[in-house]
Image (cartoon, rainbow, N blue to C red; front, top):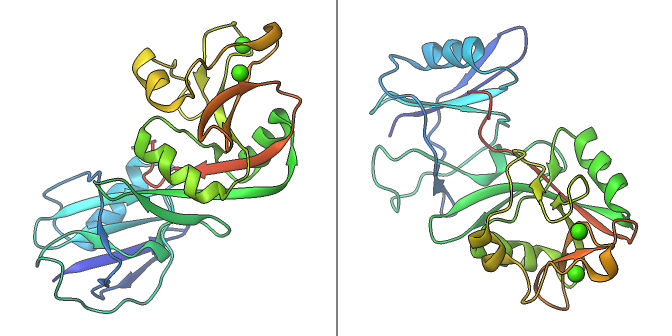
Length: 235
Ligand SMILES: [Ca+2]
Ligand SMILES: [Ca+2]
């Protein structure tokens, strides 16, 4: 097993930690990037030059797979025989910035970095709170993600990152400014929602009592569910 973690600062000082970082809760990184990179240091250089804002990467020597990450914390891990040799894996304690929690979900073992902020506040303030931490109100685009959010919510209502404040009926995700599709709407919204009740509902929350998404008055209060991307979208 030859997986290397490299974390670096803006001064491009690399810190190599050539330790196998497997454990019983390790997972495969769902989205991998460059193949054929010759060394861990070349991987770090490539990331520094190509991916603005990355603070770490992982390098898998067997395949030459180089994966830029937004964040990478050093941590300890214990070897495990459960993961095949050569697999590109990380433990969840390395991947999210301070305050954020790495949560694994779905059959493909995806990982999201999320944070719930109290006390409850309105959608605009909740959005600002996430932006100030480098993230956005969370995306919930799949039933698997919805199930994760439901579990994380633990009975609370949470603002998520989508609204139709600019054009009524045109819902835009904060994560990537994309438009809500009918397929996603049918998959994650409560039946009959969004309904723009009384013509005044433009902001979306996870509604615990319906266990799904719903449009709500933007001035109502809920906890902010912030998310920060795991992989660097600049690459
Ligand atoms: Ca609306
Ligand atoms: Ca509604």
